[in-house]
Length: 592
Image (cartoon, rainbow, N blue to C red; front, side, top):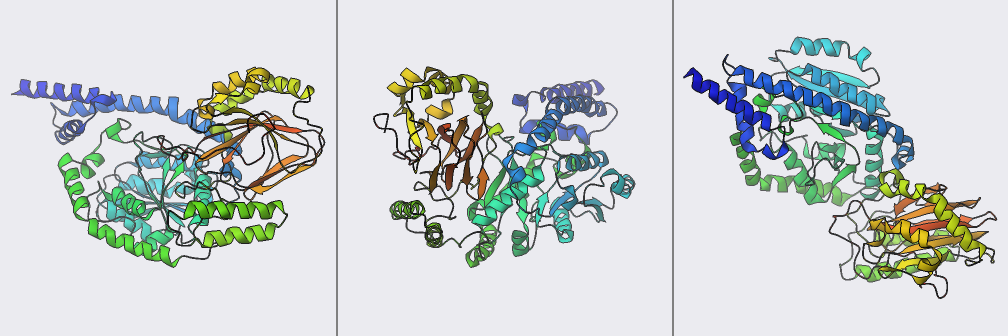
């Protein structure tokens, strides 16, 4: 009998150790782990201890080699990220975290918050611990020293109460929270990317301009879920006060987040906070040791199946929650930065109406009638043509986020172009020396453009005069492979001002690489004034309103192309027939 138990224990150990390889992790592995946790007898207890030793080694290596370098790199990059200077007002944040038997995890979690938040003073961290938690004394000791250990964080509060389950504990903490945003937290989380709190401000500010009713559900997304999953919802206070709870308590735990995300998705109010990694150190991914807390809350697959079956049976309950939130959305609110969007026009009418409105507004800007142009744009928003008066593409995707500028460092080709700037500039100088772009001609009202790539191929002028540029850009597939791709040189002559206008589609981003920076050249993107970095990129939503000027004497030249919007599904591209070229004229005979 003892021999059979030993053989069985050895088999469990082998099976659990195989879990270090992701392809061996499946539902059966959870059953093996549960069985090993429950059977802590002398002849089997060593199994979990051995596996946990390997998991702690793995966890330490992962932190040292992956998470900590990412945190340091994000801290160095933070000053150059667009949301770092977005000017959004800081919002108060409430982190809600039930915990049990994980004092060390809580300390690591709070340290990660303290080290990565730009403004930790506006954060409150609330924790719920059961009265029967064996580590309750250690929790009290930790929070008794919180002011000295985590003093940068606005407040760290410990709430002790009867065992009520994780969903009810989240609700208890939400009742005590005062933040504008309520963030679901776990004691197996680590905040990794520096400036995550400012990224939340930027995203919420952007969405509030689009949806002034304030009904929002967000989640952090740094691509950690290959299949596009969501985790750890962030709810606006409007959402919370409308439904009256943070999480539903009908589930044991498994379907709580799915409930919230399903409602948000059906409302069209589910949005990521892109580029922010919050690491979930879950035992199922072999990122944390197996412990009694996992057994207590996530014991068997049967319970998870029961939760899922209950989720499927409760659609009508979620329908009722959707109606509550929809009523708030329908009532609307005063838009702080523009008119309230209307109910929308019929699908077949919208493209033609957008085209006529866009032409009218561009003509008004060209005539110097900025106030009339803005009034027309706001009228279009009230009629449901667009969601924002400063984003007016003819080919419009309302589901894509509005952002005034993107961080060039987030795109691999930015550094690649900078490395090749000297070669590209030398080739341009030879071309300008031949006066091929007539840089000293009289001032104009637009860019002079030389088309280098169009209709799926490089132009004869590009092959003849710009072989280096062709070689460099050919190594950037994003610039030339999508349908209707164009690559252009744009010259802004001395004393030239280009009137405000929008590009054709918000399903693409426009990239403008500063080849030759004219002193006195600048641009406005949406509400922000910007300048082109010498040997660097500006990346922005092509549907966003912009204007450009060159008040100096030297010419100003950029190399421009378009890339698919990063929030698009990879299979989705701009509509057929939608040119991504800007509306400025091409030079005669050079690829109109």
